[in-house]
Image 1: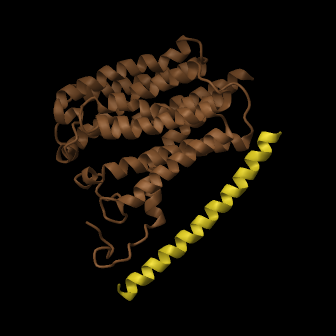
Image 2: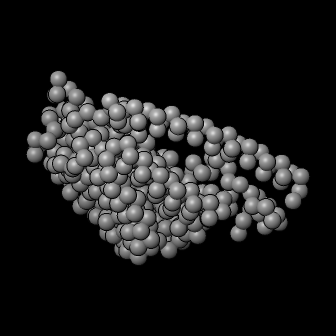
Image 3: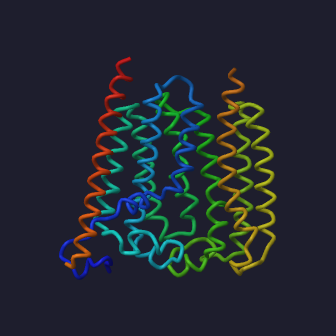
Length: 305
Length: 40
């Protein structure tokens, strides 16, 4: 179904540029760019400013491309969810073909530019992250299993690896530790959200954990994965990959995260209108990642002096 | 197609053409800067 007069007219309505930007999920990009930038900043070695800028630009464009292809594939499902019904494709403001061309074009361009500007190893990781998000997460896992965001979380964990690889041309223990941190952070982050938009996912037929296994199981799983995330968060300091600034930040921030996760785990509320702690945990989880990655960089800069 | 639709299409084409020009200009500068940075 098309709007903007596309049915009545033989000339298709060109997509508004703002809708093309919306296709890239700009809000998600901030976290992706930030974690990628942190990976780049803590990597040993020097990258000229313009090349570092290009590397971060490529991470942003690659993530935007993955977001666009995700929206292209999920347009029908997005139309059934209140949270996503206003996106350009389900709202009928853009043709699916435009979204597909935009996504594929942006993906190819970001990978090629990364290869030319930095190195082909970083470009390869970027390509893998885009392909993983589109094929493994969006097409394969998301509509099939409640473990979709557990395994699919790897897609969002690649940016620090890419940022690091853009500088060094390889990967090391610290970026792998940062990858693991995002990987284990993803389940409590998304399941906190899934608790209060459960009906949306159920209506769209997406087998998120609260839909398939119920809220009680989801709450327990949030707590379980928060424990593993806590270990992943403290691993860099235990392995002496970072110093005390990161260690103290990780300890305090993770303790707050754990306290919120315990509160969520102990509740039995099923009305989304009364899910204040769940919404707080979701919001705090975003801040948490910003805090820890920021601390890695501050730690690296301060202790390097 | 109604005149309003035609006007809207032309307006969007104009804006997109301007943005495309700006993006291409920015890419020219970026590729020039990358070339210089890689030569140093």
